Structures are given as C-alpha cells and as structure tokens.
Length: 480
Image 1 (cartoon, one colour):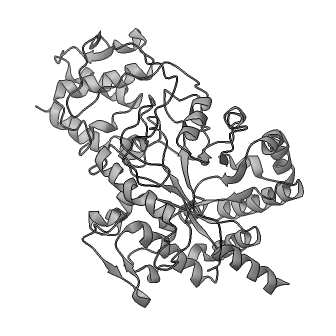
Image 2 (tube, one colour):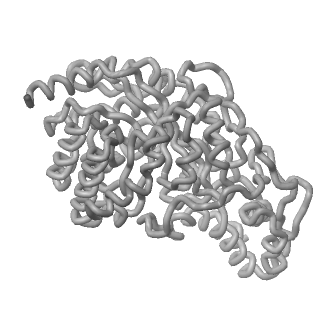
Image 3 (tube, one colour):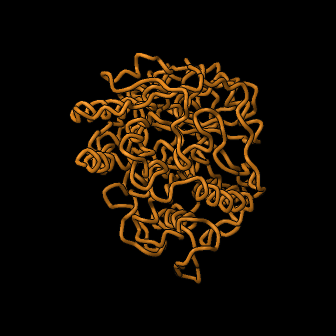
C-alpha cells in the first residue's frame, strides 16, 4: 500500500495542473484599502489566488463568493497549543471555511530559521501545532486545507555556488525530515520565500543574476549540464537538491513570496521591478520549470499588492514591495496574467484622497537639537525609507528632507493640523513640495484601520537597524 501511495503522489507531482500566479496582501500601513476594494481589484486583474497575513474574519469574509483561493495566517503560537485550542480555533472559523475558498494556513512565520537562532524548543512546538491543526481539519472535513510554514534561504548552508552543493543545516535536519514527511502525507507543497535583490548580493553574484531572463552577465554551470542565468531558478533548484538529499524529491516546491521592491535601496525602483516581472511572470505561465525540474509547474505569489509603510524594518525596502501605492495607483506596468503584455494593472475603484495639503518645515534652524528630535519623531511615527541612500528621495536638500519627514507624519495622522506643529517647526502648505525624483505623497481618506499584526507576533522593531543609514545622512547635514 505504501508503494501504491508513493506512486500516486509521484503521478500527481509529475502531471500536476498548470502553475498559477497569486499575490500577497498585507495591511501594515496607515491608509489601508478596504477589503471589498481589494477583492474587486484582484478580480479585475484576473488573480485567482491570494495570501493574507491574518485570519481576521472580517477580511476573510470579503472574499466570500469571489472564487479566489486563499491562504490565511495564524501569527500567535498560543492559538494552536493543544487539540482543544486547535478545535476551538477551527470552530470559530468554520463558517468561512465552508463559504470561502481557503486552501492553506501558514503558521507563525519562519519557524526553522527561528529555531536555528533561538533554540529548537519553539520549532518542535510549531511542528506539533502543525500536525494538531491538520489532524483536526481532516477530522472535520477540511482536509483540502493544508497547514504549512514558509521557508527562507538561510535554512540552507551558505557559501555554495552550485545548486547541487545545497543542503539544509545539520541542526534542523531531523525536524525538517519530520516536516517533509508531514507534507508528503498531506500532499502539500514546500513553500519558499525569496528576495532576489538581496539574495544575489549575499551570494556575491553579479546584480544582473537577480533578474529572470537571459540578460545576466553571469552563468553558473552545474552537474548534468544544468545552466543557471538567474537566481530565481538557481534558488529553486537549490531547495530541490536539498530536499533530494533528505530523500524527499517527490515534494512539490512553490514560491509563496517572490517580488521586487521599488524604493529604499539601490536598484529598488519602478523600472527594475517592471523588468523583473516582465520576465518572471511569463516564465511562471510557461511551465518551463528549472534545469533540475524541467517542465514542472511552479506556483508563484507576487509580493506584494500594496506598500506597507508601517512594516517593521528588516531591510529599508521592506515598506516598498507594492505593485500599487497605498492610494491604489499602480506604480509600473505588469501583466498579472503572465502573458507578458505591455500594460498597467487596473486602478483601485472608489479611492478618495485627502485634500492637496502638505506639512512643510519652516526653515527655523537656530536650535538644531530640536530639529533633530522632531525629525526623529516624525520618522519613527511614519516612514522615511524613501530618503535612505540609493532611494528615490536620497538627493533632497536639508530642508526638503525635513519637510519630507514632517509631511509623511502629517499624512499618517490623516492631515490633523495639530500633527504638523512639531514644536513650531512645521506648517501646512498647499503648494506641492515634490521634486522630479521624489514624491511627497497625499494619502487616501481614513478607511478600515483594524490592524492585522498583533503586538506579540514576534517581530521586533529595532531603531538601530531602521535608522542606521538615515542617521548617517542626518549627521552629515546637521553638521554643516
């Protein structure tokens, strides 16, 4: 019976359906699109699959009747700590399990990476929670919903050049085998998350290697004549080789997060993002596969739908993933159908903007200490990553830089005039202070503000990280 089951899995693996393009939607921003607007937007763009970074019922409910397949997220480990709590959680969501197309549930973030850094105890508990939740789902008739974890490349040994050299770190191998056995039993994919703009740099590859297509000046040749010209296929096959070394070559691998940011970092801009997707999405739709798995469909989730200006900063560009600005305007051309057409995605319907007003620095520099304190306050309470070195607003003058920060805080506060005071350093203006390269935004009216990410989600904001590059810039100007 075991042999028959394995053959069936292999047949499903080799003859699976065509790959699909999905999209991730997070809501870590001051101005958020209403869920019904997002559902409408996805339908307009022909997106049939979406990942939500929450299981919040009012958000999930908006997808009822849409036909869009959903991945939802449980962020709090204590929610699934026993069979009883797993059963209670499912019962509370059962109405939407029956009426919405929920296909997958992600648990707790990067549990394997966290296990490598902070001890294996939480990882072991997360694996127990995965099985608990899946068992209850199966018992209650929801076995089509797969419980899973996202994986990131830091689980693989570093300093390798060829995918065939890849392997998981020894410390997590026993637990990875347990996880992979679970995926095999439940016919679930191994979900990979990738940041090509960083991965190419960390592996000392030429920057052109980050882009799909054949434009790379770097070529990597591996065993059996495999040739790699981009990091998307290189990284995918690195995981495939690592799985094979654990005797799990039958496990499907998908990209649950793959994207290109548009600001906050050198090379993160509209044109590079447009180029990235122009070559990535037709590759997904072609079912071309990779040198290690030719002709194999690979599902890819584009990351992400909108910018998230309140995202906690691991990288300066973390707030600028969006295809759309937070006001619902598309940033660049992208054909989400994967046909490679030269077109903008549809614009969000029903968006209402706040008045054309900005908060500006009045130029008072007698007390530089006060200026410094108010600038830091504005950036902590909003988002100044567009002023980081290499970003779109990195060439602003001293006064423009202060105005940018003040205005971002002002917009985050929905243009409350009191928020533009900054101890007498700010004032409201009606003339747009934007430059040719740098947009000083006017955001949308206050919409649904219920937050997705609980405070105990495990992600910590570190001002030393978030403001390191900006502090260098600030020190330079305030010393003049």
